[in-house]
Length: 125
Image (cartoon, rainbow, N blue to C red; front, side, top):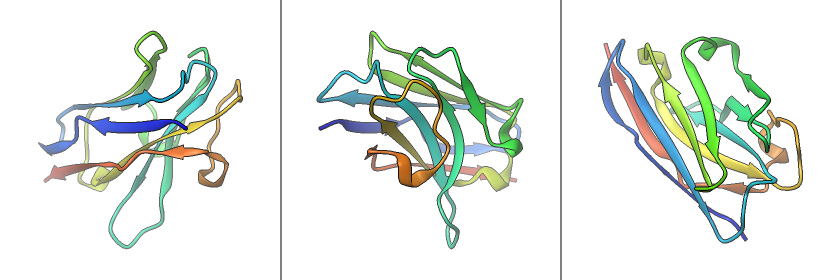
């Protein structure tokens, strides 16, 4: 089993930045694909970004390209999401997810094996 714990969410003004962290425990996730998703009230959970096990491949949802950056530190079993130029429409609960034994990126919710509890990000206008 893998436990994922997100942190770093909060309230920020439009144009501001936040860095989310996702700490994994239970098993090493160095050979896991990792992803970030978000869910706004009344909407389905949507893909934000994914990173391959090595960190060499990254993939982003179109609306966050150039503003959000995913990275990982396998020595610390932690994945990060740096969010810049935040917009009110980025407001959501952000979730970290892990997919075992996949070298590449994964963009669909149903493929992930483990999920965190989420961290709230609120962007005020």
